[in-house]
Image (cartoon, rainbow, N blue to C red):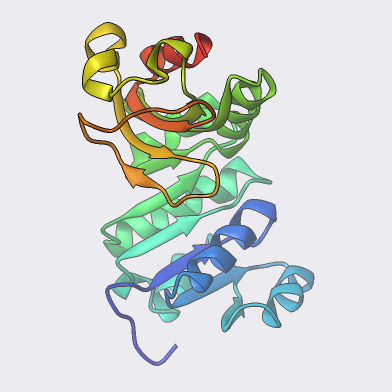
Amino acid sequence: MTSVGDDSVAVIGLGRFGGQVAASLERLGHEVLAIDNNPALVQKWADKLTHVVEADATDEEALRQLGLADFPRVVVGIGTGIEASVLTVIGLVDLGVREIWAKAITAQHGQILQRIGAHHVVYPEAAMGERVAHLVTGKMIDFIEFDDDYAIVKTRAPREAIGRTLAQSALRTKYGVTVVGVKRPGEDFTYARPETEVHAGDLLIVSGKTSLVERFAAIT
């Protein structure tokens, strides 16, 4: 990479998680530097990503030579070895990277990553398991949970809201959730307003505390 901008991201570890993160970031228009010590993975992703290099990320000097100190954000997607993950994060912390995202395999691994300086720890397997569990029940069409006990869901409109405006049904008062928008079959998404009338077949995008949106979805 010739220059590192504010939208540049380095992704270390090109396994299933890291590779998909790198590909998604590049598709969204970010400059991505992808790093892995496995020649086979480097070759696999070389045709899919613009900048892919083979390097040992546990070596701080290697990270320095690659210019990681200049990157505003680095994602550590190493999932095969806790030691390699920890050493990589330590190196990034020592280089002064201001925003480090790291994948954790277990809760204990995540605690270690936080204590040594990772700013954001993600648990992709646990998050996906939670999401799939909600979708399997059929109560939610989609589910995204954030790390502060806050969630956004897409769910069917409850019977009590059909034929009434959001102000009339008072879902926020009754269930403690906020209806962000309404998606009607065959029509574009519209932001919710007090005067928005809910029809049969409408999907609601709802936000709030995870426990409250789960309770709300259960009534649909």
